[in-house]
Amino acid sequence: MSIHTMPAQTDQPNPNLPVYDAKVLTEGGDLAHIVLGEQVYTLRITRAGKLILTK
Image (cartoon, rainbow, N blue to C red; front, side, top):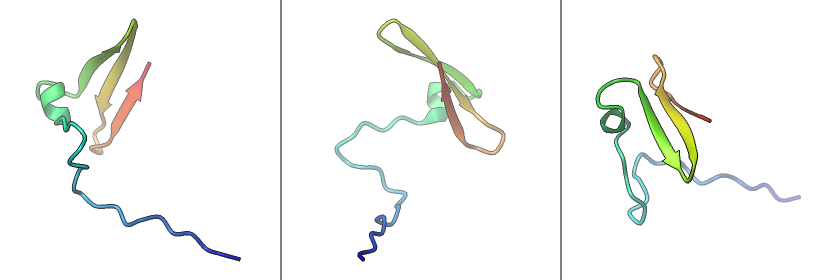
């Protein structure tokens, strides 16, 4: 029996991916719309500082 562990999470983003600040996307508020093709999604920053993306 082998045990697999997840790599430790770091606060450093992958340097090969674009980085976006959620507060910039929401212009300092807590909501923003994100468009993918013809779909519109809502990005919400919760009071606890978490992100929720809904369709």
